[in-house]
Image 1 (cartoon, rainbow, N blue to C red):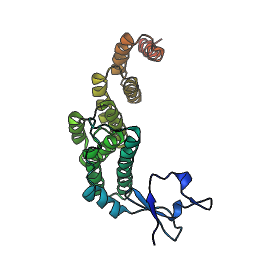
Image 2 (cartoon, rainbow, N blue to C red):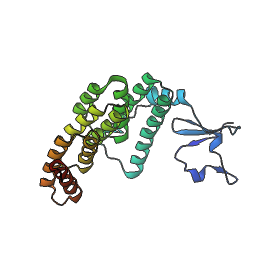
Image 3 (tube, one colour):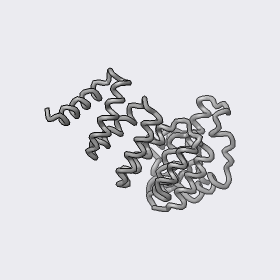
Image 4 (cartoon, one colour):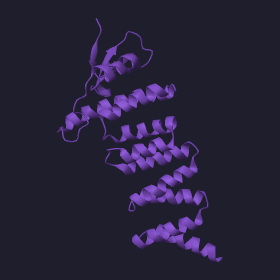
Length: 230
């Protein structure tokens, strides 16, 4: 008779006679089952995919207006993590259609989950390109748009699209002018591309608004000294 139990059981509880049983486990949805062999942890990919995309409804899980206590939020996040694990497997297998299908479903259920939004953005960039991502970012209901711009920049940079990465950060800096991480990301790319003129302009504007930022002031001064030959 098979032994099944919930995935909510922590690592410390998944033991038999003091030894971990993780190498004997198969995960299907939110349940573990124990196998007689110890050949390593297995995710039942097809069965889990089917449960999450065809069987479970997930009604109300990602809606901000639905109250969830801390325990319920933890359970909700665990479903989002499972979707991301499916996405990771499909990405590793280069199964692009399945990757986008599973992330699209995840985004429908968890529109305010930062990791789901970021993973969807990356998959969209790799499959459909920068303009598709721009449309997604502009129309997304996700409340923390700065997270999307940061991931978008990383994806473009990793893809070798340095000029696109600069354009993304320039737009992001215009929209979120007080975000230090976005600003210094733009500074780094402009230094890398030796775009000293625009860098000096951005640093001047930044230091006027943030006079206590000594790093920016020192960098601006070095640029000005270099331009004057000092």
